Length: 482
Image (cartoon, rainbow, N blue to C red; front, side, top):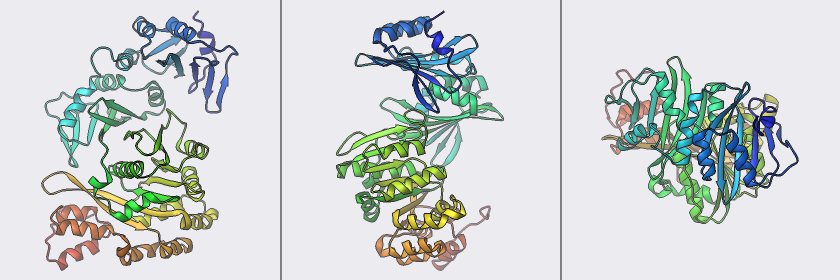
């Protein structure tokens, strides 16, 4: 019986054991962490403990102080083991998965983590995707791989049809242990994958009627600057605020992450502050320039958006980025954080600035909505709503609607007259405000996008058609009517 078996016996599904040099073994779960024994472990003891349960290939890597991941089965339990050494300090985590993870997943992540042997097989498809300038790679069991190029789906005809077991094998080589557990429990999970010197990828793995599937979203290694994106002076002025809430909204795949990244990079170059980002997963990686930046990933560095946001208040931040405001608790804490002297950036999946305000207020129970309207009227400083349009000749361009909260908008929010915000935006063009229809119409006039593409993206389609007719611009509505 291995020495760690006594500790593993105490593990429940979703819990993990943490072994660190100079510390006592800790049992971590949803309720927090607690010591399992009183003895502090040395690095040599952790090497010995992990080496005792490691398979042969992993034992050799442990002996060489190289990072490794593997699975260990004891009695009816299976644990995902992760081992690493940094500056002479050894760390190991043993994550319970209730014995649900297939043994076939054990070896591949270890070789990738240790930098041994060939790179993960999936990288072949990701490199091909990169060369095609595709934004996404789609893997679906029973289908050939597909990529999205300039907004259109395209099948990789020279690749074979992927069987369910093949998709499983492709993903097993890169999926972190805690994501393996999450996928087995919920049939979907998110994580990041990187090919050094090429690109990072946001990965979603899921189960559908065909079997296992995944989508890889390409995240360029090079950060797109605010100057390259052509962000207006009024939008960039939001980066100089000392407090308040700034939202970047739009449907999935509209470029919200890229815009937020550009804003954080602009702050990083022009202010001397502390930035905390909370993401799921970490997408763009920021290097320190003029600011200190701490990037935290959900399920890896923290439990949830709301938990990390509460913790951020004790971490002396000036700017906090919330990758996604998914629930009422996160939204409430974000508004409170903005009110208490911090600049908060966040995202929502809304299509217009006015609908963003409505969405936030509607998240709350009726008896709290008056209070939230008052808080939002004070804390909300700007909303950038964007969508991506296919450009004539290839590529895509962002159409951005911008709302800046002045005294008039603030009063409308406080009084619950959200429906009047679009008219304020029309009259606030001198302050840099833009309405989506006007931006789309200008893109058509400048011959950047086709009228049909702009029509699809327009929210007020009747007004957009009328504007086109006034300029005698033809519009082929065949097959476009909703």
